[in-house]
Length: 567
Image (cartoon, rainbow, N blue to C red; front, side):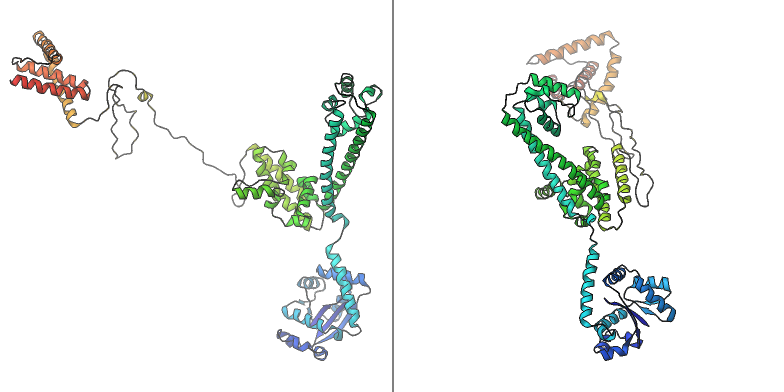
């Protein structure tokens, strides 16, 4: 078995003299305690030395990335031509698979091989002759520094520190410009207040003020290069009838100097914005496509660097910049914020207020993928950013139109919901709500009865009485009296056919009325059975139509009559 060993000076190939010792991995270090013992285990077969530090760095970087360098390829070609049946022990399994594919050399990587590499490194000075100990340390240190610089992959175009500083300066310039513009409008407004209403743009206003100076000499000034023709004419007309106060030449000089500062800062801001735009497209092109230059730069500045921003989850990216609102909501147990700096992105701004939370969550999820690709990817392609933006735009359109969303996973068909069917409700009797009308009792109809299941008894429906009558439950005795009254009514109607009987009934009714009106009742003679039956039937009919209170009175009167008749 052969061993491929990498050093700072070059590549070395050792031959293992006793392969049985590799079986005891734990005690292998004892075989390399002295140079004499180490020479009995392995023997140097071939050594390829690097010419300079550049070749050493290229070989080391290729080994780190599991690739074959030019010097290693030459060495393996010689080995392939001489030893075909030998196995090659390598320290990296990926490098071994590449060697096996290209040179058809079987490679071995195991814990025993890794331990053997450590043992060989401990006795490297004795095993590789011609390499001084001090020289090896110097070469190893220089190669380590060069390799660390390469790992950083230093590139001026990929430095996000410039973006952080540029967006900070841009924000400061915006604040200063707002202050300067406000002061300029207030200052010159004492002399020409109508100009502020005619010109809304701050930069154009400052240029106009610098060109006009005092409003008295506006007729001699040409404003066609600054203002449109219509606005220029209005400015000239308003200057003639202006109500502003007069100012001195010294005031005009200071105002024009302030206008010069505003114009210079505006020009510098536009240049800085172009610089930031180009830098963002070089450092984070996919993030720029998703949220824009300013929002992307503010996210990077808030996180500290592009790599730190890539470590954040999408939920943190969504509320980045709203930390105060988040902790205040957690403290007061209110709703947490739905967006932070990402609120100023164009995709969130163009949606309706009720959908901004949903779109900001979707945009943060896709933007986090773009950030990670920009921070950790090697190529600067913008395919991911363009595809993610298209997905977010489709999501915005879907939410704005209010369409149903397709399910992901196994259920890729459209979501099907059961249609709501209105069940037929029982008809409502409106007449039952009315308490006005005749004082007669109303019979319960089939509409008033609630729908009941089979085998269950329906509840009794109380009859609706007039407001003057009290509603009481009927007792079994009253039911019996009603039945008797119905029977007696038939008999009374038959008897009413004779004139004699009818006259007797009228006289009996008059007598009963007199008895009710008077306090002392006179004794009456005994009557015939027919007259008693007719009188009792009339009384029962009256009792049915009267209230329960009148029924009690009628009972008392009957008792009085019975006592009178008995006497």
